[in-house]
Image (tube, rainbow, N blue to C red):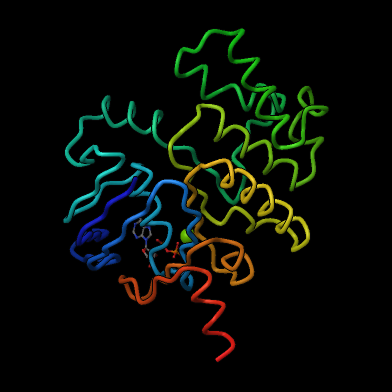
Length: 233
Ligand code: ADP
Ligand code: MG
């Protein structure tokens, strides 16, 4: 699904340049649930943004579902982004004056999906995240965990190939975090490919594979079984 070879990324700031990603090699198969771990500033969001086609790579290659993502024009990039990718953020990024259902339906509106189908899909995915009864409510009437569920439903509504989540539990207490991760696991069980950036080991432990980023490179990449086994030796 995802193939990254020798990926480099620097941020230019005037005369200076900050080399953040220094040769990342990374493949993700369909149906994986991957945690990208690393301390603050290690480049996790930078990597996720490149994977999400929100930012461009400097060097290396990126293939997403067989499509080479480099030098695509804006229109094509936006097309692929909408078709392939769903995003979940730490701060939910819901629109405050729109109901839960309207928030979930919004990406479909931009994809010119007809109104009736938008409403059906919104309700379908709100039901999947356990929020059917809350469809008409505003974000301000929802708890943090419920808001993130709405955001997850929104990310799923366009039925993307890959879900990308940047610190999805970062704004939630630990009980709610586990509930949101339970939901993410459930979605993954249905076959969705999911990548989660987190700095919380407990959250990473709920994924199937943990990739550890440090100083711009991957220093560890293990299936959860290997991680668990190595804890007890
Ligand atoms: P993480 O998500 O692991 O905390 P980031 O990918 O956000 O790390 O950032 C990696 C490094 O790149 C940090 O030193 C950060 O300050 C810097 N950085 C991130 N975004 C930008 C930007 N748009 N311009 C300049 N520097 C940035
Ligand atoms: Mg970050």
